[in-house]
Amino acid sequence: MRHPGWQYRKGLHDLGGGNWAWLQPDGSWGFSNAGLVADSEQTLLVDTLFDLPLTRTMLEAMRDAVPAAARVDTLVNTHANGDHCFGNELVEGAVIVSSRACAEEMGEVPPSLLAEMVRNADSFGPAGAFMRDAFGAFEFEGITLTRPTETFEGEQTRRVGDKEVRLFEVGPAHTRGDVIVHVPADGVVYTGDILFIEGHPIIWEGPIGNWIRACERICEMEPEVVVPGHGPLTDVSGVRAVRDYLATLEREARARFDAGMPVEEAARDIALDDYASWGDAERIVVNLNTLYREFDPSRPAAATTELFTLMAELRRERR
Image (tube, rainbow, N blue to C red; front, side, top):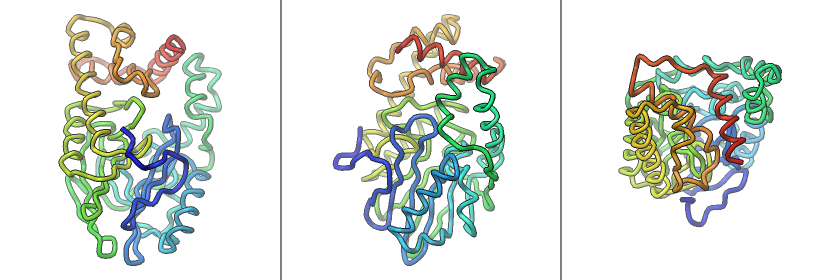
């Protein structure tokens, strides 16, 4: 599913035509990707990173490669998760664009909360150990959450120099306000966390049908290069793989829900052997919890500590 000919290494990758990708292996929790579109001395940045040191390093590399990136004109946040927006404050002077739903969701899990979770991880038992493993590498202290200055719903077309860049709201799916960024003339799509390549996606919001349709929409664009929110560069084969994973998971989850099987039992019962090489398989706990609530809207949401405890148990068992 990796794009043929592209290496998966940390750093800035020239996609051609003024399009760039910033990749962060191994793509697991918090190690997200970003992108840059440049033309005629104008620039558009797709997402920032999980903390200020990571974002600063990325921006310095972009400025070295693309002098116009010394001043980013527009920053698009694809969704509200911190690993795609916590570095916003470093993009001074930019118009920050997101979907309205993203802007409303942003800040529900602020940097200060994650800093506190990591600092007090020992008090959460197995869930805390998992949180520290997932988030302990990042510096959440001292981040000023910087929100979008402009929002939209549905679709929006922007110009970067002479280049057309199209924004499509495809959420709620991964989160409540997911957006993908398409550069039609160059055959490049930046997907945010609609795509996790070589890793299990995590369904915080749903409905899963929206996510499947978002994958189909990307395929209809017939892109040559797809920059996922996590993992290596891909093409439509990677998009189809994520779509098929989601369809399989929905089918398997529905069967177990209808049989009255609890989430924790279903998480152990669903094999997903075709995806055994993908990382972070324990995310099935979150995915099933979200799907069960989709199947039964009266079902209460599980507490975060409960979900992380179950993920920690499942990871330990499978290792």
